[in-house]
Image (cartoon, rainbow, N blue to C red; front, side, top):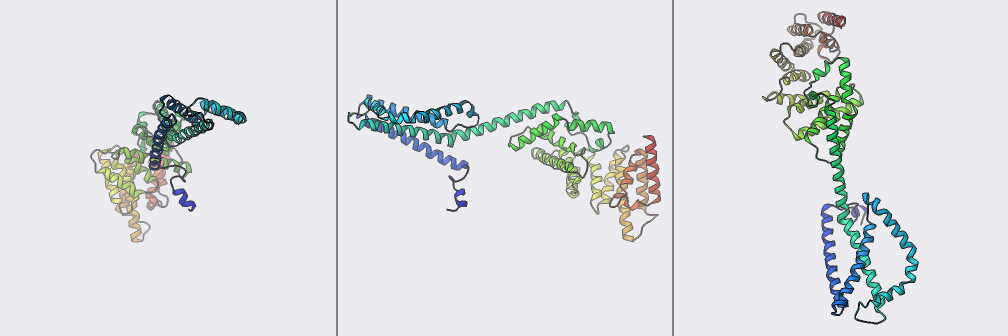
Length: 440
């Protein structure tokens, strides 16, 4: 038989499958009950019908079997049993080694003692050696009975129970850390109510405080305990899964872009959000966060598909339309749809300036398409150009900080690339940046 075939067989493998273990367990118990029946019949035969001698023969067999079973137990201890029973086993091995010679020398006397018990209905010289053989046979049978009982049933069951206890302890640790953590972070973060615009608009001091909270020891310990639960295949509480997903998501925004730490945090956030969605597939908060993470990885078509599906649901949050107006800017040919959603959101929330900015980006991208189709570098009377500048001016008027963002987005392959050298755009952004700098 080849090595490959040998390892695929039940007894050659490193570990029995549940089905194989069940089969061997049935065989083990069938052999054990058969051996018990044979022992009873054998003891009756040895006693030659005498109840006293039959009982005495069964007692000797049982005592030998029990002694062998104790030795088999000590030789199969493992794990937590090592501490209480390991020293006893070592002492028995040392004792057995020390008295082996004496035992062999006194074997004749031992045989005479057993023969003198008169197990058999006979006083022949062969009774004593046969008594020794009987004791040894049942001693060995007891040893292997306990050995295989532990290997096939007890040890695997104990190991599985130990793993379950360890996983329960880890789950308890997660709950304890989660309780401590709720006092450290605001409920808006823990419940996922913060949106990215709120994080982006934080001042430097507030951002540092939030970063310190998000990466605090309690939070890190909680997330590590959650990872341990996952690796241990433990059934986690839904609120812990949701909390881990949100924390990983917010942590992404406090890592620098295009770094290994940022990429790793994005993958962790995706994994936990997928776990949260497996428990609550219709949760709009996690679907929005999933779309945002997919957008970070440049998977805009997937992100838009999620947001468009949410936008059709009456229970979705109102800002979903704003996000749709933003993500559609990255889908070629859907600039008009992006503009429509952004303007619709602005009409519902006139004091909000981000939607105006996104609509301005959409018209600037349409202006770029217009320039490319006509093969020109500038079209001064373009309606797309005029509308983009007008909306940008309104947005900057409400929120001067957007001027710096517009200037940044005039780089190649960005929304305002078509207006990068436009005099009106340059004048608008430079003047607004200067004004914002003086006010700050």
